[in-house]
Image (cartoon, rainbow, N blue to C red; front, side):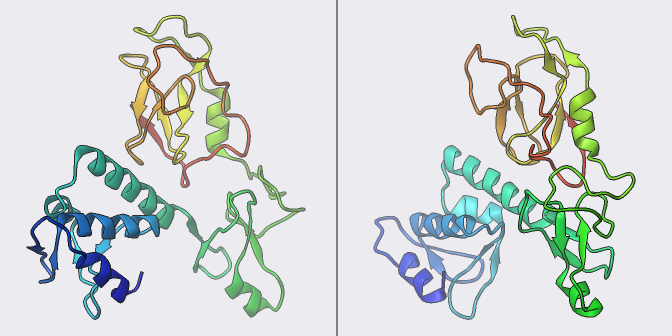
Length: 242
């Protein structure tokens, strides 16, 4: 959104009083909430003033205080900020040919083209998103390239991890002890104690370890092991315990 559009949001006639932000510009709680929501919808993870020639960053603690965010709004803001941050930092890797950062646009294809190397070499240069070597073999592929040693460590863990027996959840059999968060792909291990629901420490989204859905039902059908290469996984691989 441009600065002019921000002014329209900022100075709409809301009934609530205005307050001055750290950058010196006045806002109302509702106008500030609306503006920051739009930034989050644009996949931003930082809040900045939209006044022309300002662009001053507002700390989240300031936004939370001045916008008078409700508990539900705080939960939405914080989970969306975490997701947007993850998209920014975990969807790029270093090209093995030139050492520049490259972003993958197609999550269903491990073959990624580096434009810098393509120009320098005078031919299409592609590397494997998984093993970070120059691409070998046909593509698109979602499982691996033809380089020796190219395999998905996270998928191997999901396939081979032992089953879990919950201490306080009855009639659940055959549930893997490690799951990939259905939102961000972080690998999480359940200790078998307490509730079957887990809060992912990375994206702050809570889900059921049994059915992999954002549900709070007492009983639900068990989802099979996440065995396909299409499973959303965190990159780089990291295992976290509940």
